[in-house]
Length: 219
View (cartoon, helix red, strand yellow):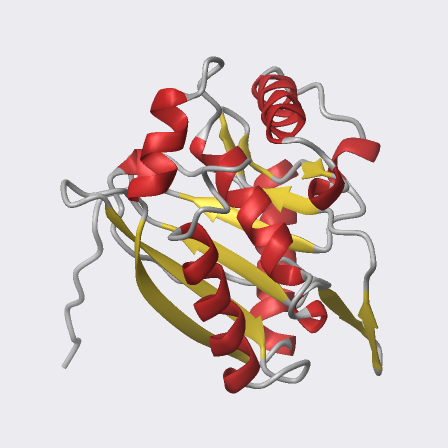
């Protein structure tokens, strides 16, 4: 006796190629090769909101968060690292890869030396790279040399998410939306082969304290 099966009607078939295939290959490698671990914390971002609203040039939230991330890394250098073969490379440069949504797919341009730049400089670089990404004009230099990644989905009304590590980096930070109570979730996805959950928790807690402190006001 034959067994009937049901198959849904196909509207169209899109070949996995180009940037989508590259993203697939990199993320597949990351999930298969890196033992992912995840942490998350809700933070008070009222100082961040106030900083943005009271600064003349209205810096982006990303610029403020990147400065806080860079400052926290100084206390926890192993967060700013990569795993290549059997070597953990801990970097002195703090170069933040920032995930950007474009019509062509996800791009991750790099803002270099975030810790050494002013908030305004970081903000201007982010805006310039984001525009280049939207116009598909990013160069190889623009997307290489990152040491940690930040992905912000707050503008998409996402409360909390756990992003996949951007190889060969060891850490990626996810930022959710700012709610009506001026709170938001931060998450940390990290390579458990490089550092343990306790160190990740210490980093995330120090990042939380920094964002909630006068540091933000003094940027």
